[in-house]
Length: 134
Image 1 (cartoon, rainbow, N blue to C red):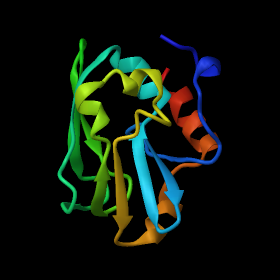
Image 2 (cartoon, helix red, strand yellow):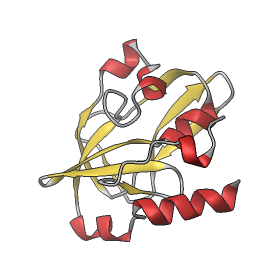
Image 3 (cartoon, rainbow, N blue to C red):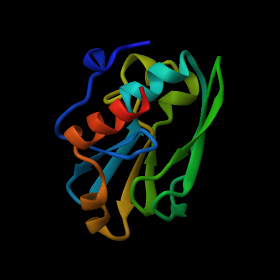
Image 4 (cartoon, rainbow, N blue to C red):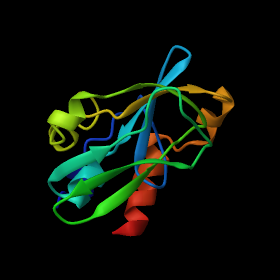
């Protein structure tokens, strides 16, 4: 397991207490799981994602990630419509471990209320949250 100092936590992202990240890209939000989450899960072997067009509320489960250790639900950081899913994860779920912030992203959402982004943690608040877990 990585130490807190070893984790990659980009400053341009927002985070949830459930260890998802959100990147604002124009009027859309790209979502994945954090370096901490993938490290805790271990080797990811399967990712179940929704179909584009489905809508979810903020904090609602939108999929699952299965590793050699456990199956974990994925929670949407902002409510809205799924406009794109990372189809590459069905063939290469290990991308979640190898590249959690780039090639291992999970979904792109069109937020129903863009102001929900402001309610997410910034990198310093997420780092403090992680200190409370260890």
